[in-house]
Image (cartoon, rainbow, N blue to C red; front, side, top):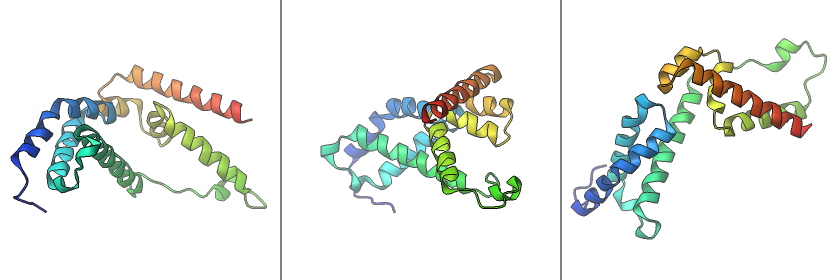
Length: 165
């Protein structure tokens, strides 16, 4: 979807935000994905330049586009059959009657709480069986820092569960 009528001034404005986009990407994804995210965001903006509205501001438009790219990537990863394993709860609980709906609701609320925590993704990855070292390498941090993130996220979940009880 290339449109050759895009003004050169628009391209220059987008590129002027390159340092800010790099900084924002560093807050959103691990180190090895940052350059790709910035490039994808710029390409998205240049391809869809006609969607830009001056009243919202260039930075806001670029930042929302970047967030959308990250969100779509996360949804795609969650749907990846290699990473997602569905285990029916009833098969492992030996229940004579199905689990009540509020059990599922509590589980859903707990998972939402984990996901909203600053280090929730680390806890979820550990729960899925990923090793501390693998997470540390991907995030560009030390194994000890990943372990501390996991401890913080676990503490957050415990606090949330105590508050709900």
